Length: 108
Image 1 (tube, helix red, strand yellow):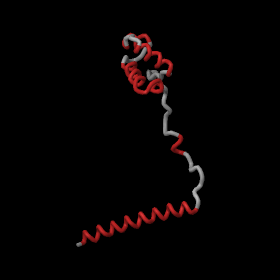
Image 2 (cartoon, helix red, strand yellow):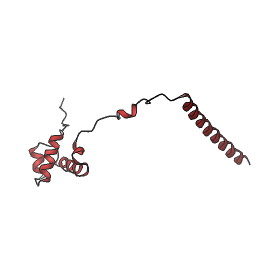
Image 3 (tube, one colour):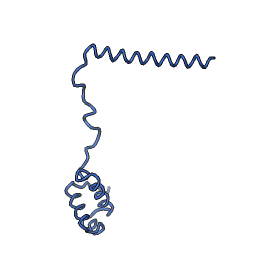
Image 4 (cartoon, rainbow, N blue to C red):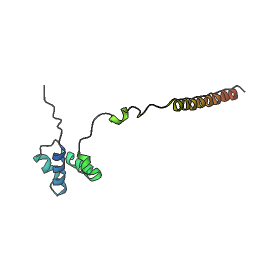
């Protein structure tokens, strides 16, 4: 079984490579010296660095953000719940009324 060649690079490693590239060193020479699989990696990192700054080179957290799983801050009151339900039921009645009106038009 062969070992995976997919390497992960640290923020400091990428930043150093980009700074050296922007200072005028050749991306091919840098790629060979740093043992990168492709000189295009340096070009890609440099583009991210120009567009997003240093934060573009930092590793991104994987998966869905935790903020999407937050529970409601406080339970809603009975009055709020009833108002929300009332609004939903009004919308449902209006929708069903339009559906019935369209059926009546088709039958004519």
